[in-house]
Length: 353
Image 1 (tube, rainbow, N blue to C red):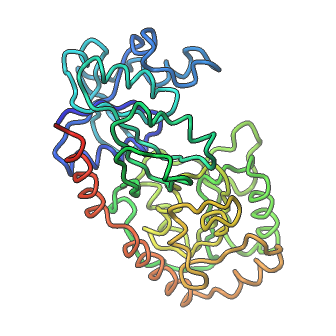
Image 2 (image 1 turned 30 degrees about the vertical axis):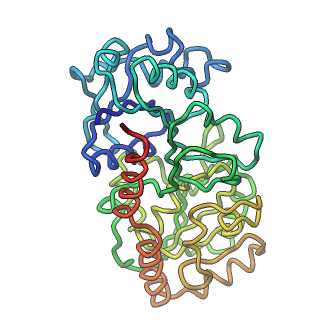
Image 3 (image 1 turned 120 degrees about the vertical axis):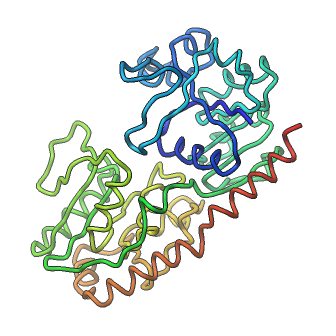
């Protein structure tokens, strides 16, 4: 089977690469501004014109005929121009962002392909869900929970976004002095509440090694900035080099790649469990099942900085190691990529001729 999908998130795309490998399918991504000019690719068009399209569609000087190297995941991606895609006649066409649903559905109809949605962020209300064009879709692959599943009347599966369990393998922490507490992509410092709590607790515990990985946007770097990491394998290693995970994201975290990575690596997670179990929004996230209070993680949603300081101070090397093993075991209890691939295969058996 030949699969054409748009591309707007590199880890969402990687999950499709891994899925297609399991299913024996071949995956392609569009290249060239013809996709934008003929209005198949429309991501952010209304707000940014062709700027975002150029980011995703313009060729790179390092491209080779029909393929592009992905340094984050260290693999070649198949790329096709609009003309090549028409000749290819893919069997399946997938859109991962609402702005592209209409254009890619139109392309699928033109080449006689089945059209589906691949959604990493599912919204919190009926009005928001209307942006996802289920009326155009033949199927859906979702990696976050639907708030109103009764509204979807097409075949779909809810699965975890697959990622490399070698890159994010579990190894017991080598707890040293100082204890390392690390944060990855929490949306700091725009996530003001989580960022301020991090800084407040860090100021109370100067003997610990506090690290914030990820971009600060337009804000100035602070003393905890640990820089960006480009390769996913290096992200996994930096997580293993940490002793405790700090994760206080509470918005725009549909699948929650970082939180699943933390549990796969196996580190005690300190953060806003209430977001993931639905306490903040009323809608739980897939990662909610990973948080087991006092066993794999701690919820600090409503704790003061002093209370968090006391909690962290109670975690000695033995307990960190025990919780690390429990977190990794819980991930493997909740997430099974083999079983989920078979669920997707069964769905395609309903959809494909």
